[in-house]
Length: 134
Image (cartoon, rainbow, N blue to C red; front, side, top):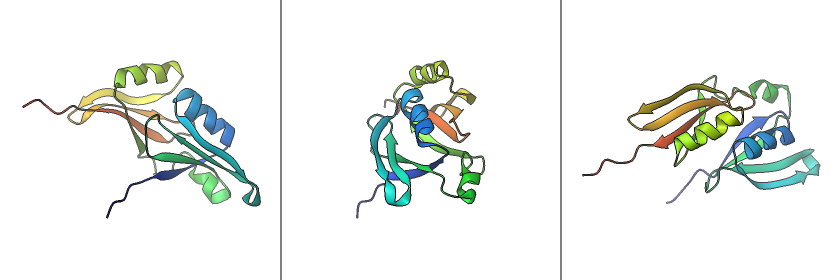
C-alpha cells in the first residue's frame, strides 16, 4: 500500500489576504482558485515550489473556526517548510517583513528558524542536514 499526505486545510480570515501572504511573500505557487458558489466559498490551493503537498486556504465559516485562525495547534509549531538554502530564504523572508521568533540555529537535523505567518501560526523553516560522507 502507498499513501501520501496530499493537502492540509489552513484556516484563514480572507482568501485574498492569505494569497497575498503565501504567494507574494513566501513565494508559494497558486495551484487553484475557483469559486464554490453553492457553499459561498472558494477552493484556494497553494504550495511551495516543487512540493507535492498542498495547502487549502480555507476561510473560516463560523465562530468556532474563527477562534482557531492562527492557533490551530495550541501555540506549537504547525507547519515545517524544507528548503535547499536556509540563508537565502531566511534573508528573502525577512526582507518581505516575515517575523522570525527563533533562530537561525544549527541543529543536528539541520539549520532551522521559526517564523509566524500572517495569522500567527508558527512554521519551521528548515534546511535539512546533509548526510556525512563515509
